[in-house]
Image (tube, rainbow, N blue to C red):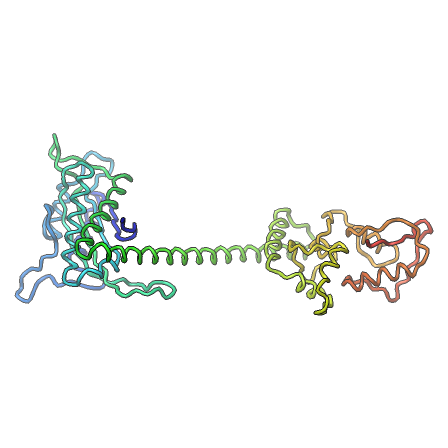
Length: 401
């Protein structure tokens, strides 16, 4: 069994030599506080100094450690390194499983074991270091009601010399790249597994590990859900912007850029998958009774496309409606849709209706056809319009098949 990669945090950083004041401030903070808000007593009831630093060659006070960082800093680099700092922090449930009276000792052992083995893995002499143990609290709650039985946050702050005892020189620089950082995290995880298994037993460690894997899965899913919400909000915002721009171009009587039209079309097309065809027909004004289950199929026979690839919107002219119903209408050079006796049939041909140019012997046939179109939902004023063929050669018979 291997522990989850989230079982422990091992975070290594470096501080430049020229940032001596910054380093000293961090060392003082490590010594005097457990967290930002909690000051630690430096002397006991008898006035004796309370030892905070575990000295492994760097000193036991922030002043002495700062002096040794200066002494052991790198030389010959463009920007010399004054010290390296490391945080080791086991996951809170793992640490809470250790008996309370043993937690600080276990954290101290884990810190020493990690540093010593890391340098062994790098085949380097051991760098001097010192560390403090902090007992803080997790400040924020877990999201979406995920329970957290403990908030105690035990971790160590380590200060390492930026150089190591040299083979030929007094001190040698050592570099830490991606490979060394990966080794550090692997070593800290393996040492933690070794110590926790000794203290708790393999079965208990396996249970903790399984719980952490499940928690990780929950947190990842929450991140995914939040990302999807953010993406949807961004897409919606862009949709609103595009629709507003389209209205501006329309109000100014200008043709919108093709990029804008494409963006609006894609947005409307995407939203169309969430619409119901029956509801869209009702939206257009069609009367649909409950006993007409085949109405959509019958309208598809008439040439309507209800594949779910178009969304019907209100306040659109007949050309836009017809395009969204699936009719292939070119963007330019569309005949004006007037409602006089000369233009209406030509306009419906432009909309995609197949109207042959054959003889039409009875004018009442044309009245019936237009009445059928009106019943289908098209706004065609028939009353008061006298429809007479302009020329006998132009009299036609409308075939809706």
